[in-house]
Every structure is written in C-alpha cells, then in structure tokens.
Image (tube, rainbow, N blue to C red):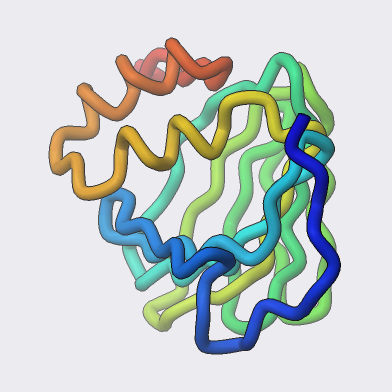
Length: 147
C-alpha cells in the first residue's frame, strides 16, 4: 500500500521530481498515495481534455489563474481563479482553455487507482487517439466526438 509521506513539495518541483507533458499541457506531480493524487497543471491557451469519465474516482480542480471552460454532466460552466470544480466519479466532463492566456490549477483525484500509471504511459505521446486508447486501460473512458 502506498501511504502518503509527510513533507513539503516545493512550488517549483514535482513530488519525486515528476513532471509530465501530456498533449501540450504540463502536469507537475505534487502528492501521491493510494488514497489520492494531486498535480499542478499548466494549460496553455487552446489546450483541453476532451469529455471523459472516471468511473472509479472523484476529480477536482482548484483554479489558480486564468479561466477554464468546462463541460460537466451535459452543461457548460466557466471557472476562474479561486473556484473549485467538483467532478464526481461516473459523471462525464471535459476541460478546455479557450481564454487566449495560460491557465493554472491544482488537480486531484481520490482514490488514485491507476491514474499515475496512465500519466506515465501517455507522457510525451503525441497522438491523441493513442492517448485515448491507453486511457481506456486505466479507468478513464473518453466519450466519442459529438456529431
């Protein structure tokens, strides 16, 4: 069992030095245990995570800067600095930065399940279709594109 160690992850560093590049976004791991995982995310303008479902995890976004346009359970929302986005397990959601500027946030999931393994596998994978295929092996199910 992976238990969270006590300590501080400095603002400019990743937990155990871990930083992932995933389809133009930068995810810096901040905390990891079996119960939860947290990462700092930098979403350059124009980047997004298409609609998907985590059937076994709750996911959260605390917006630090910028703006996210969200699709959550069939409805559109906007989140800005200081907002907390709650995405319950089993509820489809998509995350988009259409703002024209970078957006930063702290993401976390509970429980962790295999999300860390997913991020390790899709780090620097340039093909979105391959990312979707790999994600399905790690309990993240992307929805088919809307017509």
